[in-house]
Length: 133
Image 1 (cartoon, rainbow, N blue to C red):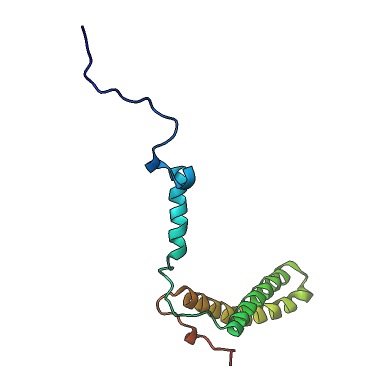
Image 2 (cartoon, rainbow, N blue to C red):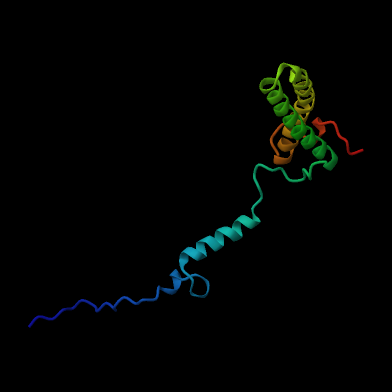
C-alpha cells in the first residue's frame, strides 16, 4: 500500500559526534577554554614594548616609600589639624608640610615609573632621577 522511500534516520545517540568532543572525551566548551588559555600564554601584552626591562629597584623603592609616607603624613596632619585642640594644630601643620614634601615627588616618580613599565608612549625610566648608581 503505502511505502516510504525516505532513508531511515538513526536514533540520536547519547554521545556527541567525535568532532564535537574535546581531548579525551571532554566537552567542546572545555576545549575552547583550553585553547584560549594556551593562546593567551603565548601572546605578548600589546601595550608593553619589548626590550624595556624592569624598573630600577632603588628608584622604585624610594618612589613608593615617599608616596606612602607622604600620604600617611598628610592624612595624619589633616586629622590633627582639624580634630584636636588649638595647642596641637601647629604639629598638624608641620606634618602637612612634611607630607606634601614627600607626597609630591613620590607621586610623580611612581606615576612615571608605572608609565614606563606599562610601555605608555612618552614615558621612560630616563625621566626620573636615579638612585641606582
